[in-house]
Image (cartoon, rainbow, N blue to C red; front, side):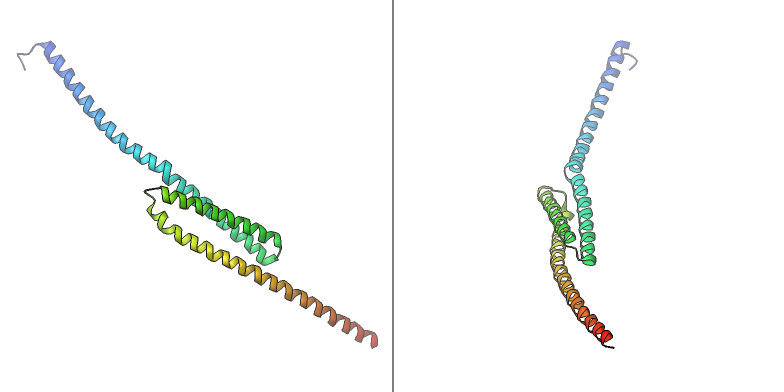
Length: 162
């Protein structure tokens, strides 16, 4: 080392710095490629999954509350709104199914989507049961009103005769 000229030492040191910088750049490129893959998974799979899952939750809750209003009031407009809301739920489930079939990394979604679809089918059947029961309840209420009118007419007739 002592016999080398100063220029040779400077060129050697600079060359060593270039080799180190090149190695660090290569490591950075490899690391960034891994980050790129993760960000693509996030943007193409995980973010849409989270968005659709929250949309599904909102739509299911909306359907439930609308059908609860129908059950309490018996108003047909609530049943119509409930059917429309259920159609939106099914639309969201179809979007999730499409995402699950296209996505490679959403293993849990693929497994749980079938359970959700079965639960919605069951809920749809329960909605139909609710319609039948509300209609039966309204028919009974109509009969009760008719019977009450006959009773009151008889009671007023008795009152007049007394």
